[in-house]
Image (cartoon, rainbow, N blue to C red; front, side):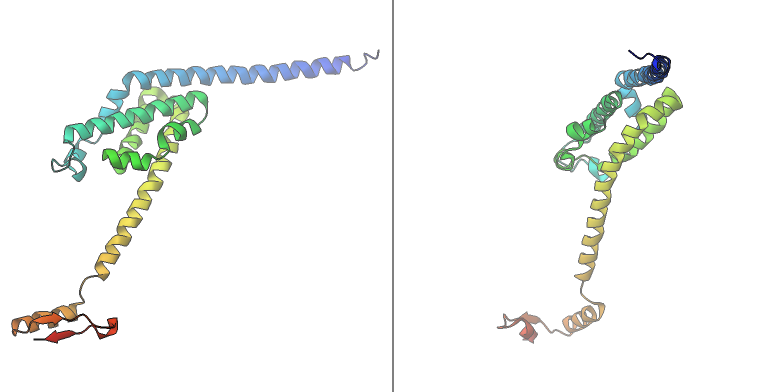
Length: 214
């Protein structure tokens, strides 16, 4: 049996072991930091959310008493949803897998938010503030571990928010196009003041739709 390469093989194994140990050491260092960050979020989630939540938003349309749900109930629903998002973001951080957030939080979340009257812009603003708070209390390293998972949630929420804004803008343009032209409106007002009353007949063709004076 040839043992001429035994020394090279042994040294390569030692180098491989050192690389594995380095990776394992790095894993345990970040792992401890992740566990500590997740534990802090779990323990102080209510305080973090209350600090970040925009109290002035309670006076917005989403919290008006005219809504079916009372403002205090809506506030509780928003806080509960934020705790839910934070919990699964922490879970995803520990697992190193953001798809967990999709599976448990973001699948069909638009319908859930709409049914519960949850404001997406308000959730987005609160999560953005939470990022700063966690970086402040958990340190920059803790923030670097957790904030990417909040960014993942924010990206999903903001994409839907942008779609809703585009739909609102397009609907406003349609409403503006339906407004009576100013020249026609002036003529209608002038004829009305002169005692002319318009009566519309049902024509055979759409092109024959003209007002008939009575």
